[in-house]
Length: 467
Ligand code: GDP
Ligand code: MG
Image (tube, rainbow, N blue to C red):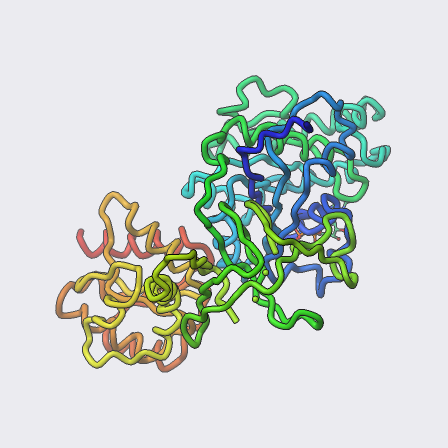
């Protein structure tokens, strides 16, 4: 009756951008809460998600009742903006359908904006640019919650020309980074040209535009991807201890449905754990996030919604259906956990056969050694190495700080293929003894603050060796 196409699931949207661009504040504004004010240093430390039902969007955008929106809502994932959390940024973006890249209009594109754009380009994720903090333009008259066209009409010629000048500059910067972009209301090629939505996360000008654009544009460009299928596709975001419910797992249900009582297998550091879903909970979308008793109970939940119970963030959650082989499901879960198990694994031989057997990551006898802080980043780096014109194989990987043992494993390449006697370390500490052993033995350790810089410095090294 509401004109919602039942076949489509809610698009999953993540928010990226430079630190202080206003990601947290924008999300607050979207869900009308005030998390940003309550965070230590204003930095988002963990991935959270907010489900915004389409009714909420309709109400806020005063959309005509007859106007159809094809998706049931929007699931927005908040990703941290601080550089040290770039591994989580990567995790956040791999499960997203679309992204909102937040750019501070007074600062234009910054380092992490460009890093985010790189990431989206490599992952083939479509995005819109929220050109935020328009209220910071000198002389701006605030028009709370107004659509941007209306807000602009209210400004002086001087403010409007400053606005246009800033937009033009950002369009040029985006072009320099390989993206054609335009203000969304002037964009005639919405399937090719990146939409820019001017916003303020403080006075909420342009927020209705952003929400409406997302629920209308996204189904238009990825109808097929959003078509609901019955296979459960579910990713664990966070594990929490709740006073009332005990251990809860926050998940993103990308596809399929979960029911109360469903038997599930989750990956924990102690191995796969089989359990039943005791409660299915979703937070109320418009209430303050940290207030009490804001969960809604469900008998069944359909994709895409957040909401569940010791698991490893970033791994899959597997539902055991009647007639399914539990052992097989557990085995699948084991595949997800083994990377964490590798941390304590000391393989007797130097060719990493244990890793090869257990992990999903294909390792070769000859290849580089990769070390990162999370499964997500590890996968991102390995994927990137594979996508190079001269594919770089991986002989081993590990999570956490680089220790002497890791360097020992990498020294095996010195005799086999010297150029691969290297450790690519991302977002992890390199212990002093590891550095010393590397210097002594001739193993190169590469560290960088972005995946692309890391891989680039390694490939430059190989090129130099080949010359
Ligand atoms: P994040 O690091 O990208 O998550 O940025 P935050 O959301 O923490 O915002 C950084 C600072 O900019 C905070 O002091 C916010 O209050 C402020 N801020 C964010 N968005 C806006 C906006 O649209 N207008 C103004 N004036 N300030 C903003
Ligand atoms: Mg933040």
